[in-house]
Amino acid sequence: MPEKRFSKREAVEFGWRTMRANLSIFIIFLVVSMLAGLFFSGFAGLFEKRLPVLSLIFNLGYILLTIAINIIGIKIALKFCDNDQRAIAEVISFTPSRFLKFAAGYILYSLLVTAGLILLIVPGLVFMVKYQYAIYFIADKDTDIGEAF
Image 1 (cartoon, rainbow, N blue to C red):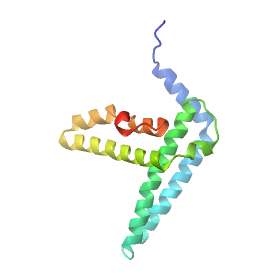
Image 2: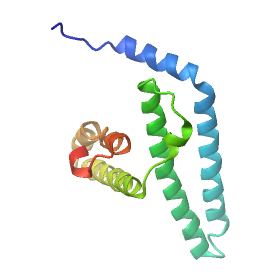
Image 3: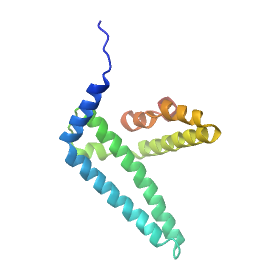
């Protein structure tokens, strides 16, 4: 069986073609996620001094929204990679258990990279590269956190 080689050029060309063909979806996703983030962070800042509890609620909402946007963004990108043009409703649907797994995996990845960067720069970079796709496994295949890492 002939060995299949990976071509960086073909990968970049595929990514560019896919992005150009679906540019409107990417722009809409970016604008909606930015507006939603501005809404939560804006109200959190507005209530920071007068109503700190309400500010905390908006900050928590911002964190949860960011996690949801990351899951949806990863799922959309992977659907385009697989050339799967299913409905957006399928992409934005995810279970609470997957959301919690993704959040825990995202936090674990961030802590690993941060701890590695604090200890020495090199371990942080190693952890960053080694585990960069763990959250993709969780978002796409609903993999357990330990298995994803």
